[in-house]
Length: 103
Image 1 (cartoon, rainbow, N blue to C red):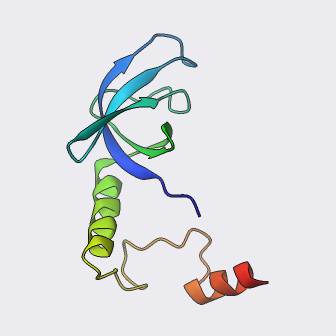
Image 2 (cartoon, rainbow, N blue to C red):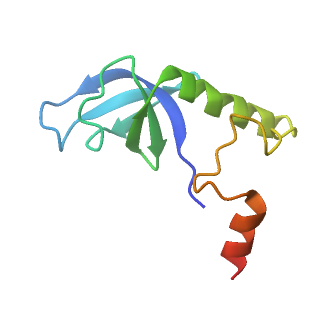
């Protein structure tokens, strides 16, 4: 399983789309991130980051939904599966996804 984490772009360097990088703030911790996959992102935008690469641009509402979910996990109180902020991606129920993985 892969995990992408939302962060807010606080600076951008580089003109070439392939070489663009930026500083992304993850709740007070800033890291350098490759922005090649999100060429239209600007300072102040939110991105989903996995292993140092911004994979997608998201809006602030979606970023805070992910923050809420991560916070619930840290507190040992995961959101219920029917909570509107829990996304299963395929539309399949969690049980169906687990069954598919085990096949």
